[in-house]
Length: 334
Image (cartoon, rainbow, N blue to C red; front, side, top):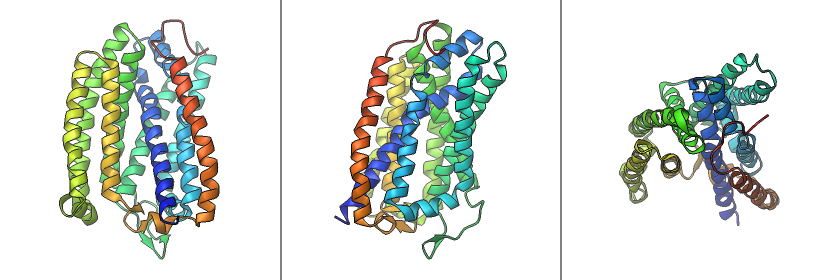
């Protein structure tokens, strides 16, 4: 039981993170593209394309953070101080973005500053999430099971690269979503955005992939030697195939193909990350089992999580099914 419970909790937290990135990723991407709308009507259309979903998408972020706290308190207590500034900036930007979303519609015709606030909040939140990822990947200085680094250990060229790379990936998802949900000039412009965002995403994926083993001996060992190479090396091949499928979808204007391709690229990146750092939860010092709470606490929390998770999945599926199809002019958030 003590062996399997941390694995179950790691899987649940991993699912929450993936769901958040895939779902909130596209509406953050639309936020970053928001000011590219050439008219108020186009920007209304873009916002209406995410209005039923955006706040529900952020549920997964709460689930992932709460799961880390209750199941792996040691990891929570070391990751948070190491990455406190980018995490705080991310949360503040998400709040700022949410306020701008609500106030934009009620402040018309004096809403232009809220347009800018929505775009800025989306951009800052995305960049901060990428920096958090980069700060985690480059390793956290742990001594005596406590964070022993400085306040700005996370601020490195690698973490900044991850921040910009995540922006490109989210713009790819956001562009594909606009292609799926709209028609006309807005959809055609989103198609062009999706093409260059795909190029940028692949560039940053390659850059991070080349940089990571040079930065970490553990990851270099995992990638190029030992039994794990069998699990890792299919990932670059599948990434190349997925990139080709996504490119063809973008070229022919298929929003669904582009969107699914972009999501698959994110899943493959997450898979590569998991293979690279497993079994560490605080890389490269603390494993899942070292960070885990006592089994009794994990079981108690797991019962609640297993009751709560189907509700979130059901609500998410219901909303996406209910608001399926394209958003026509005049429909949406009021």
